[in-house]
Length: 409
Image 1 (cartoon, one colour):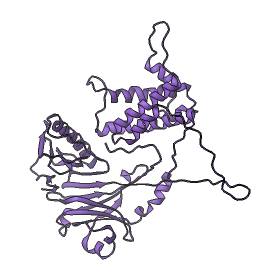
Image 2: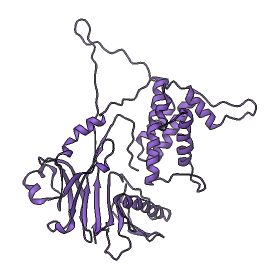
Image 3: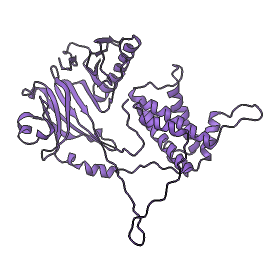
Image 4: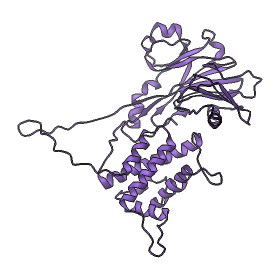
């Protein structure tokens, strides 16, 4: 059967679990454990190996296998934790994972490894006097400190999206309260409702166009921003009762919904900080057109190669590429693209990989033989009972100066 780091992946055709996923862990467990779930799915970890294998039923696509395997892996890790066997967490699932699923005439196994790069831009203005001498900058005035900055900073340094949203919401709440505190109703002596205060405080800010931070198609920005950030997101993230909507951490569908709202929340908070306190976060970066131009080499003959041994990156071009690597049928997978995210997908029938008993290294190479991205697997992956092997090697750009949007979990 196919295996990776002593973890079995694809069983023989007699198994009911012909699909699944392998994910990195933030730390290696100290035990060997297999959790059997009621759905007959299994989750396995092995001592000293920073991976978890989730074997599920019969998925029909990469997306279906990834989503179901992630759900099963999280449930298995939950069980290990509550039993006191191991406290573990998946790490950078989108960036790296292995999935397998069932198609006709057999199993497809795909390795996904996202290469992320960031480019910063900076400029410096020098002022000269009439004699050509550099004029010293006047001392900068002290910067106003606001309690909300603490929550914003914590949202930037955490690795978990849900934690980031909670802290960023608290940053917005703190900021709005410093601008327009909650009022007490004179007749009842009670504080005004959260909805009344939030919408009123938001309308009191100096942000010129609140519609820029509301869900698309808004006709009442302050109302729709409150509904989005408080009613839909904050409530679901701060509560966990089964009789009301709530989000579960590390669930792919919930992550996507939170990411979209989180982006609007981040931009809204910084816009208010700039409008009220005059502080503007550095946010220069590349445009989408610039990213496409920068990565256009991937559009013209880039190829994915696989090898049984890890070769130093500097030695990949030339004779070694021809002699030690197997070239995969490669295409630009535009259906997998996103903004600042360009995909290249390679595929090969395992039957034609007789010269490769296993795969240890995968390289994305330009048409001129220059390696663009190299994936060195921790241990070789064997492909027994696999019909087709695939490698998905996307290139992604991150803007280091912009508010964080990419989280590990």
